[in-house]
Image (cartoon, chains in turn yellow, cyan):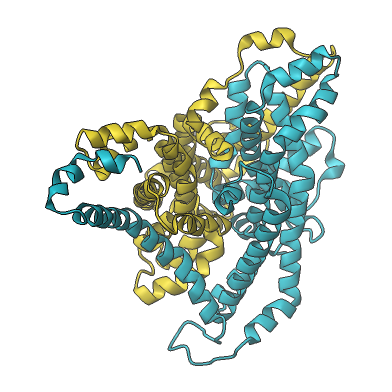
Length: 293
Length: 322
């Protein structure tokens, strides 16, 4: 409900007619500020992308000149290198497992915690919510100690499972109010028609919760995709490196070859930005829902 | 529980005896609940709670990662961490970053959110652009800014180009500057997230309130101060909470850009842990840092909960406690 209300709450265009007075200066100043913010946000990323078309010699001679001539070599070597694709596939594999688990188990928990009454329900909820206090980074070393005990060190699952677990709190916090807001009459009707509650959950509640599920899915995916410290501690072999590790590693390996580092950095931005552009409305809408509660 | 009376499955079986359907329903509910809650609780306890217990246990030992835990040293690791000058310095850096976020980043975010909440042209694109750095990994962000901030690199060249050559510094190599450089980069990455949160909060404020104030002759600034900001307070409090927790666990940006250096000038609690726990394979000692970090986060959260979030109905933590 909350994510829906975010969309419907968009201000009506009429509103500006009765809007408060504006001084003649405020409009140009606003645009100036906006342009400045835009430049500060986008310029560094554009710089990496364009710089990747230079040679290191050009960059050393004049860091702020456009590439002359534009060379494809840096990008070509990266896109054909196994380091890059290995890292991408590791990242994808881990993120898919982590996201799938977080969304599946998180929605089960949110269902139980929103539509059943039982003793200790709030205590269980509080247990999950307390997880919000501890981002994944704080637990990297303790997780490493645990994974060593259970033999999951240097294993993709050793990263995916903790990431899923650490995504559960935010998943449940977003899904519970959403599921709670779905009218009880629907559930009663389903049960009158002979459905069990689990069937109601799978066939009716989950499809209705799709917008919220997409939001929590994206959040879990992005968290996993960007994680750095946990994989750094857990993976000892470079074959398992995820994209963030590969980027950092590439930079320290090719310190002198600036243009190549630019190109690798630029390419590694593409997946995250693509997901974001594809999903930004959902993501933003979900965050709105999360804070409105 | 009106639904219990209409459940046809139960109604059909009532004939079997007065007690059976109720206990059967109860059993069924218990089975359903354990099916639904069992897996998530196991995952959560296994990978969030158990590691904390592990950390607390290992923190009592001198352990280098090989062989059994045998060298029990009691609270010695804790004295080592808490009295060590470098750890204190690291904690101080985390606190400085947190305070700077609240004092500098927050007002800027509020200002930009207010601006973006107006009907300016290109608003949608602008929101998208401002939010984009948030989805980049900290690792990519750090590599990018490391390159941009190299001496004689792009940032310096831009400053010289616009006649501000006097501002050029060793951004990442100066012990007095490096922490602030890290803060600026963190701001670049996270400000969009704050703006989106605040915009969400702003959209929840009915425009009629401001309109009424405007009709009554309030200036835009008065309306903002007396109406918008107070109504935005719950969102601001959540932002502060997330920002402080984030500042306490800062690692990726710092580690890739500076390794906590030069001369510990940008070290944080987690880079301290990485150097002294992981790299030197003093896992007992590293686990101690984790426990201390957990404790600091918890104390902050409880205090904040008690003094700041108490009145909000919007905060998830608050809702859980109520």
